[in-house]
Structures are given as structure tokens and as C-alpha cells.
Length: 190
Image 1: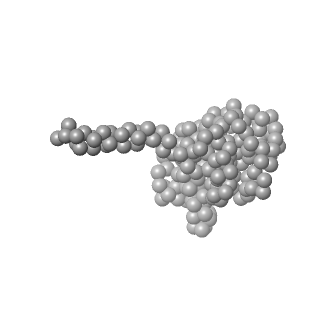
Image 2: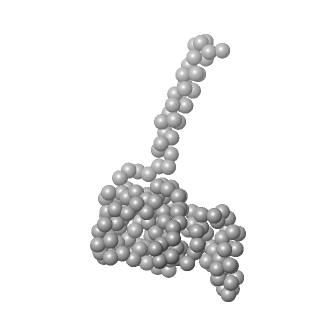
Image 3: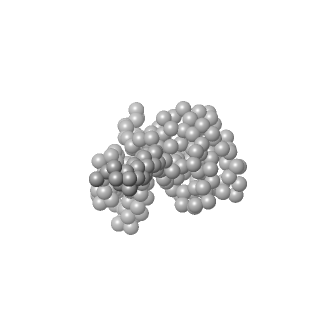
């Protein structure tokens, strides 16, 4: 599971009502629908067509950022949204796939569906790590620091384990194996 930090420009009222949103906007301004892009090469061709005057190095930098953000967003990833006006950090789980819409003024809107964790910790509760949630160069970044990821995981309502839903199946298979072994030992299974 990847943890992302997404910076949004919100008013205080929007920050207070953030948990009413079912989708979050992704920072792919100026880009058309990305749902048809399935490889870095296709993304590079799109960027070259959109920015024909940019040098290859600039296209490569844009490609690295956009492709990694677009291709690495997965269902069950956690998105942390800093709320600087209210001093909090909203946490959400991605629940679906990327979607694209054209806004009323013809603008490109890139969205990801989410559900929110009820508890909204304060930025102060992260102590010295709260600076990790300050806006840097990009509005969407992965949390690479293990201590910060751990601090975020600790604020989720459960310990995260991608395979938690598979435990019962694993237990059942182990139990069936033990029963089969016991039946062989007693001579009840050929």
C-alpha cells in the first residue's frame, strides 16, 4: 500500500467539509484523458504532442512525474490531504480507478474515488514530522519516509495488511491439509 500526500487549495469551509467528497481531484492540469494511456511510451508521445517546443530533458522530467503518479495510484492506497487552515490531516482510502471529466468551462478534471477515515488527526500530532506535509514542488507525492508512513498507519482505524481478507482462506487451506494428513495416517484416505 502506498501512502500519498495530495495538496489541494481549499477554503476553510471546504476543509471542514472535505469528508463529504467522494472523489479527489488529481493534479494533472493541462492534460487530456489519461485513461487510454497504458505505457510510459504512450505517455511520452502524448507529452511530446502537447509540448512540442519543450526539450527532451523537460519531456523526460514531466514523463517521470506524471507516469509514476498516474500508474502507481492503486485501490486501497492511502491519501493524506493536509488541511492547513484547520490544522488537520484528512486521511482517505482509494476505492476505485481514475476517471476523467470535462468541466463546465471546458477544463480537464482528473479524479480518483475515495472513502474517508472518520478520525482526522491534527498536524500537530505528528510532531516534528508535520513538516513532511508542507507543499513542496509537486502537489501529489508518495511518502517515502518509513517513519512518516508508520505514523500515518497508526492513525488508521485498523492495522493495515493487504492480505487481511485472505487470512481465513489460508487458515482453511492449512486446516484442510492437516485433516488430509490425519486421514492418511489413520488409513481413511487412499
